[in-house]
Image (cartoon, rainbow, N blue to C red; front, side, top):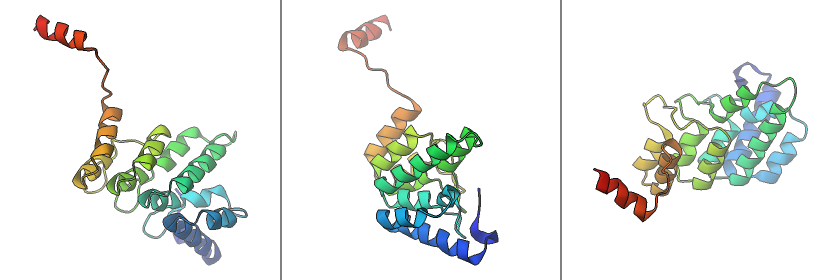
Length: 171
């Protein structure tokens, strides 16, 4: 993924502005900023390895997360773009190995977690501390997110009471 470390200072300044808009939920400002910028700037890493997607997810800005994912999907639909690169963007890790899913789970943003999962976020990625997004949610008492992620990892098949009784009788 691109990093601003090797960019001209004007580009680095624009990327910092995009990341700040995502962090603080400044949707209109982000749209204005992106009018004249390439989509790749939405997933360009800051000096700490964070992207606009990381910041929007960490702070629960669903509208901005949706916008970024939509932009990435439009980029993916271009004949010159490999769709697997979009999954890499959703699962992009910062300097500490955290993905946007880690941050949204850690901070209790369930709708953002659900949106990321629906768009290819990998629940099995561990950060440099060896923690998954589910672990981070559990450590911060975000039980609804833990339940959701558990169901993503191991979906529970609904059974009727009669099926449960029959299964117990066969034991």
